[in-house]
Length: 354
Image (tube, rainbow, N blue to C red; front, side):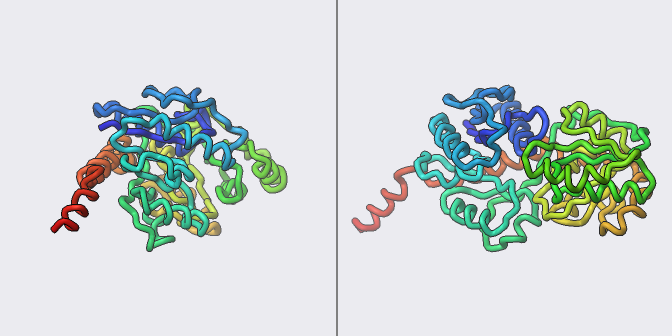
């Protein structure tokens, strides 16, 4: 197949630090190419994913993350560079609504965000001309009437993640500096459980800086270390030596790639049973999920779980090969069912003639 992949304009593929969606797109691009397919990627021009880049791309714009104008401009250029594709997989929000894209080419759109009412409106409209992929069953359950072509959990290239020994004597938190992610709750959980905590977090946007200054920094004591935003290699080292990965989220996260990253290093996850977390964490096997009040008591139990079992669960359920295979199966199904351009018109003409 000739497969076009469209990522957003703000973060490179793969990302240097923060960027969950971009990690998934990078993994798909490499996997499709390794399987013998021709892949063209529409992403920032400073991306280092080893597949051909669509013409006309510009460099990443991290300072404008989430800005509508930059995404719309990127989407227009992306579709201009997607000539000759058999199928296009769009990972932007606005792209599936772009009416000047080649409608003769089927488009797949993945929902990477929470299906709150505004997003649900967008994907209802997108579903009129695109096949919609969800990343968890919890995500789908929030708008059950939305037509979903497939639910495909994320996966990752496990060869890039070394197994850790978990001998660092600390718990860790990795995520965005946001109340949704629960860094303050992670501090309180570790403190009540009597274990040091290391926090690594993206802290760029003004609201992230304000939250850190107002809610997290005042909580930091001698047993808590704030590291900031770190590279993948440093992240996996941090996770791998932690006894437990803390994920006390406070929102219905559609997936949570960081949980499978932690499990890939062998580190059990302790968090709240919100969003897709119960689809990822096997309670009592790869971690524990409970209320914020329960987490300190559950922490020692999580730390005692088999690190080998955590890694094995990721290899079984969240590998790159499984994710790539699931997507290719969907693409083949879409292409097999697609009516070639002109056939519908010819059939209608024949009916009128008869």
